[in-house]
Amino acid sequence: MDLDRTTTALLAGLFDPRNAAAWEAFDRRYRPILVGFARNCGLKDDAAAEIAQETIVRFVEEYREGKYDRSRGRLGAWLVTIARYRIIDQQRRRGVAKVERGESAMVNLDDENSVSAAYEVERRRAVLREAIEELTTKSKTDPKTVRAFEMLVYHGLPPARVAEELGMSTHDVYLAKSRVAAKLRDIVQRLEQEYEESPGDWEAGGRPSARLEE
Image (cartoon, rainbow, N blue to C red; front, top):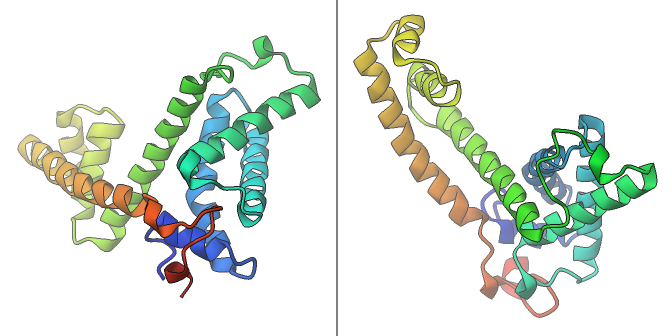
């Protein structure tokens, strides 16, 4: 199975402790999301990286022990719950009061909706990053067209400046934006579907069904 295609296939591979490829794929997909989430909770880079590591290790341990219950929520909900408690534990160990988390703390750890929303924002960013990387490396889209889109949409530069810097007309800049946006929508939609877990792929107790282990 292609571990990079679906979350269900990835978890099926992760169930085997000897499957290093599954571990690496899982880590590559979810570590950036967890680091971003922890940063939005007010943690500095080193602390956020520590939370991400602890969360991934704890999830894998619980998953292999059969504690991951697909019926109780999707993988993201499970991960963010672990991360949330790891952050609270870390703050408790370090004697950090809520008021000392800093101005960068944009997530209320006491509010489940705030926590879930923050994780979802980071997940969508991760999907978009992967979509842009795929568009850049695996499609025939002109790199200049992609660059024009990034400068216009992500960096907020005026169309005239983008055109000047890339040697394009303003009309071509707008066309680039439209073409890249359309292709990205298609890629993002596919990635969202591929990352989706299928309930029918799981047996009671959180173990992959026999057909996924074949």
